[in-house]
Image (cartoon, rainbow, N blue to C red):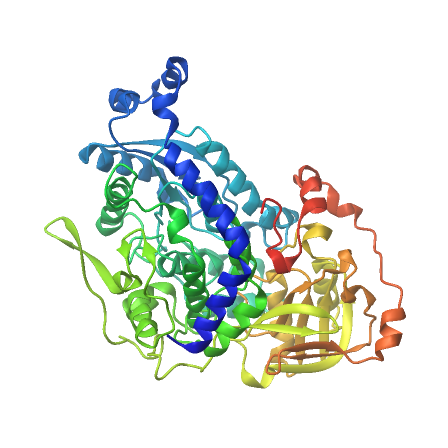
Length: 601
């Protein structure tokens, strides 16, 4: 085992000892009590079975396993539209095994692609905690021996994992829908966006390109937060092996969904392979997830989500843990925005199975973990295939099918991971460097202060981005306005960079997992609205962002800077419209970015 991985794992275990012990004790007590079906009153049980049709007798007698399905289905969003068919597939497979399944409840699934740059984006991060709450309500009926979670995108999977950990006394399997087939290449779409931002083309051409890229059912094909989520579920042992990147509405995808139902029944407390999710989600699983995140150049959003997910399982992660893991994890993949390929190309080149095998052999992953597929992460080097109509798992790729997309540990694209921590007199932040050219890893320039995205876009259109600058967008943290993504600024900042200027973004908000070439210090903590140093910055101050040294600093006299009166802008406009008034209690109660920007954990 790599010494740094071992050291970090031990530190997490020691730091979490008390919280983890209390969590496991709660899960053991709940597991010992078992599902409440056998203890319900006749009236209670009648309500459970009233609409269950052919499964009524089996559920009422409690003689077989019953799966609770938590679904993020809606038919507006491409990533979740395929889930319409999943409950029937799961029920059919469960019946064939002598078990049953019921849709326990639904959770909301919003799309950051729809809300990007819109007021609704201020609800995005909070939706993660709402999803955890909604799943908790669904499972609170306590009628289920296992749960299958249907979700894919940005906040949905983290919220579902938080719920799964909370109900850690029962098994949990995550069944994804898979990515849409490849459309307009992502790099061509990005170029069209920049041309539109520069005023070179009109809206008609922009819309044509966007619709050619996002064109059918399934997850967006770039390697953003949604597909980073799918990677995590394999590295952490919550998917069946090879499930992440199989396209929707295909025979293999349907077979994987049915296999998830069969496996969920096999690992309940009724059999000899009982695998409650509390035993899967330990500190080794989270370290494996962090290694995967860095090896693939995954989304910065997971820096927040992994902390919150871990807390739900009694585990305390810190950004320093992530930085140290990144320092020894090689970047093995180039998938857009870190390269030209999409996730379909990545999967064809060998995908996660090849990567897991390489990282295990290098001692960078914990093999000795429990997973929903069985004991040992090496199970995830296998590849699912259909043979005579039945799903089987064969040995996966032993070599990369395309070295421009996927490389071995011995010949990585860069020697360390794509995510780094920054710290200094402006607080702590994170930066994704995997898509940033080395010559842009250090930016030292005067700052230009903004308090919302529209101000930035207006200044760019007015021709004010004609020099080197550090664009500071503050009061974008969780307490200020829910910590929206600022990805809609990427075209303007990208054009500025392409014009030969040094440019960087510094913000207490978030950037999309799709963000790329512009260096961005994000999640700055403490946030400006909570007394953070960003509130003391003034236009013209010189800030140095150094991704190589891991620093973020304003170059002014320390005493003078500390004596400045912090800015206190009027944030009342953040409190109303498009549902924002419903989340006032969230803005007041939310924790800092460092602890996952969470409300419920």
